[in-house]
Length: 230
Length: 230
Image (cartoon, rainbow over the protein chains, first blue to last red):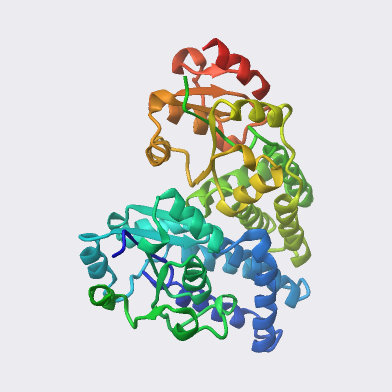
């Protein structure tokens, strides 16, 4: 039924937001002598939102946003050592292990026998290629596409480049905003596999399978069974 | 003679290293009360080299490397305001105008009539796409390929993706290391258009047209004439 099944990467194939939130917690701790938790969170989110148009997604932009927020919230009193700790958290994120989600490796191995599989992920090219390599999953994919933003136009360009008709394309991912809505906008099929954590800037309201015609699976491991029933 | 002519972007189509070096100068000024110029330069270069494997190429990694160097060379005494200045230099680089090199727009317009043109650039996806857009040159290119490192394997993958045989491919760029040597390694043709400045980590020794069989042109504007003679 599908020529290509494409997967989002972060929080679909492997844990990611969990690691961002762990660093987030450390950051709140770093500034806890200066401000309330809620205020620090609000300022960091505001800085991240503002910096998206300058630095895009990914660890490097997150590091720079934390540094700016620390300077702002300490009125410049943050020390060099504290700034270095923030940079080191970023390095830890980049070099840390990539932990795949349960059942992912087996599912990809099964599906690769019958379908062309692809990764479509947004963010930092260097970071995403490195994660694909470290995950050990790279061999299952015939293409890894990193886009700077997952818009309908970005998906249209990827499909055109691979000569796939939207009717023959299935996208699988954890983000309604990035993996489901733009793909449904193209008229292609999409399967939502929720992850327990969602970054504030990825949240959307008023979207459901009923309103937007996508499927929800609890785990990627349910995908082969789902494909047999469609 | 060629099906595809591909161009490097930074310092081939538009100025780039000039802007990095201007920020570099500001950085030397920021730390001039602490150290000699040569020592600051050596430490920054060392930090950049070490961080390449963590953060890759581009403005964001450069900003983080400057911050780390400032912390190190001031033994943590760099102030929050000074850190913020470094971040702001990075933002200025990202949002500043993209100034194309002389004759580039006209040359691309001419060549686009007879050839499929492409950009192959390394570095930060977000940053490079933004520069293509701001340059106003995007319409001349049938593809913009951003790779994390310009290796022979990376060029081979791009050529395979676009179904171009190395015999029918010409690469044009300012970096011997990134634009000429790996392309010659594939057996494809390459034209070197030097830029007056070369980043220390892009320099190579012992490479000449005689040893590596590439052409040198003084300006991109000489390319149509060169193509008529080959």
